[in-house]
Amino acid sequence: MGKRGVLMMNIGTPDEPTVASVRTYLREFLLDPDVIDIPAPLRHLLVRGIILRTRPKKIAPRYESIWMEEGSPLRVYTQRMNDAVQSKLGDVICQVGMRYGNPSIRKGLETLRDMGVDELLLAPLFPHHAQATTESALKHAHKQLKEINWNPKVLELSHFPTDPEFIQPLANSIKPHLDDDVHLLFSYHGLPVSHVKRSDSSGAHCQKVNDCCTIGVKGNASCYGHHCTLTTLAVIEELGLDEGKWSISYQSRLGPAKWLQPSTMKTVEDLAAQGITKLVIVSPAFLADGLETLEELDIEIREHFDEHGGQELTVVNCLNDDPLWIDGLCSLILKRFGSAAKTSLPLVQPQ
Image (cartoon, rainbow, N blue to C red; front, top):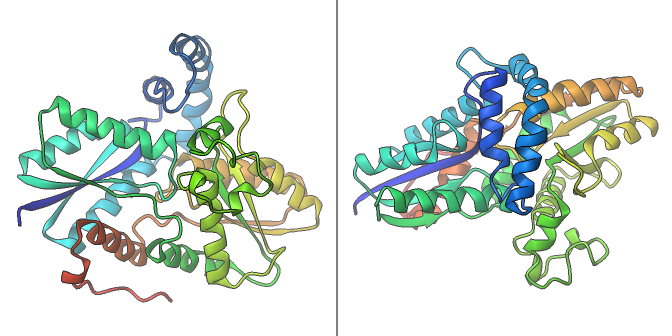
């Protein structure tokens, strides 16, 4: 057997919490047609003519408020995750590649190539499939493989919304924060409705059938909204939560397009109006903490909840390099390589 390698792909982050660095990052991110999927002239007009003129000045201070001594939280936690898996697996070489920004997917691939890898696993760190995350990362990785003229055996890690390797660590991270007075909110990253509809291979299910996200059919096998619902229901079952003790919402919308509903901002406002004073928020779409969890949820949403009568809000950390999750990720990787039965890993037991 030759050398095996894993490229762990995350969304990316600015290099510095400055207006210039944020502008560079957003330019690459928002000009990706898999993110804003409108005709190219309109996309460039929107991004270059409007968004890049105003948004970097608003977002740079938000990044600065969460910046760590080692750098951007998303990059720091993704690297820690990578290093923990590398340490656990030993003979599998692991590298990080960000879809936008640094370290780039190309740099990660070149490092793996130069280290003699001949069986490569492309591992998007997104539990739920979406055009703007999983598809974009994989498409870009294959493009870079061609450009550097490297032809290893390539495998892909698929989505894992209900895999126990993901659900058990996730539920275990939530459990310490629950009590009889707490309401649990699952806040997922938002997605334009157009992306969801496009993922419906039948064209007759997504956003057309009542409770479409709760019903599994062939057409929505790759639907982001359906995957988010599946994760929520799997965690609820694992935790044994009753109806009425939890809700689902979507955060981080951008632009005038119709996005998945309900929004997290409106949901916490409604929950406060219903008399809920203790709220726990978990964001399972993210495996590593970043701007969306550390600033949007833990600062903006917290302030909004307080302003509307909430008293106590807890944001559950992303799984990051939690030992139980590292075990789960190692298991997912080994299963994809087809060698889980041959490799024995000491597993961390949930508390």
